[in-house]
Amino acid sequence: MVARRKLPPLTALTAFEAAARLASFTKAASELGVTQAAVSRQVHLLEETLGFPMFIRLHRRIELTEKGKTLVSAAQEAFDLIAASVSEITKEDHVGELTIAASVAFSQFWLLPRMPDFSREHPDINLRIVTQDSMPNIESSDLDIAIRFGNGMWSDGQAELLFDDEIFPVCSQDFMRTAGKIEAPADLVAHPLIANVTSDQTWTGWSEWLAAFSVELPKKTFGLRCSFYTEAISAALNGQGIALGWRRLVEDLLLQGRLVQLTDATVKTRNAYFVVIPKRRRQSEAARQFLAWLGKISDPSLG
Image (cartoon, rainbow, N blue to C red; front, side, top):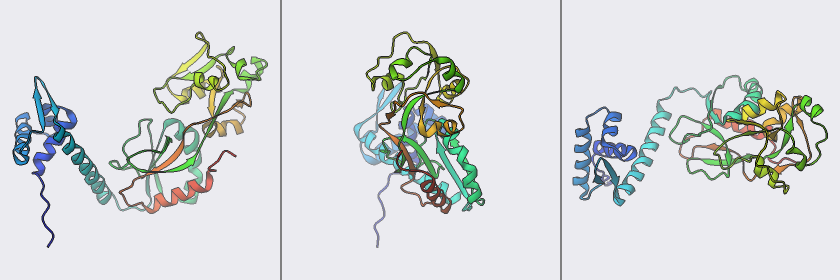
């Protein structure tokens, strides 16, 4: 006979996890739809059951004890797994439903232009594309697949290399004709440079790109600063200056002649694009077909 698991009261554990995550009994009560006193009672019940405090009560705030930190980490992992399992077993039983997440730039420039080809090959699969630069946890969401740029070391899923990338200066045909002779990286700083400002540490900006060729970005440069890469490429297409082109993202625009590569100077990216799939969830037939299609159309090297 299998021994019964020794678990604390689950209602108390739920209240504790919410209070720990939100660092507030009041906010936990609001989330759970109960009173602040009810949350306080449940946390006290948990502490009595276990025999030690979960929180250090300070003036107008609470802090987790070391044992509290250990328990909340385990509780959150368990709740995430339960939420993912519930989502899996309660969603509509439709083998052709597929949810894919990718960054705004990758979706616009690479993924969405190729989706018609996939849909023609698999007309029975309904696609949902989630575009956001802040990637949600794939284990605790309804995502089937995420495409991410980075080092491949993510704890919430299994990452498989899709392809790497390289970066070089690009501009419109009209801008190239009026800009004059540009042959080397050092020539670029005399022209308007289009940059996108981001806190993403995996992103390569003008300063880092020019430094690869021992060129210093002047303190006073003229050009345009954008919040998103899609805006920077749009500005380059409109002839407003020179942007950094990530080959995987601007490849179609180069083939169409809407953008041109200004020099032969390129910088290989430190990171790469990866396909990330949940570790703990059963992979659907639609996901398997999409992964097979990705492998068929993507070259793992830039050649």
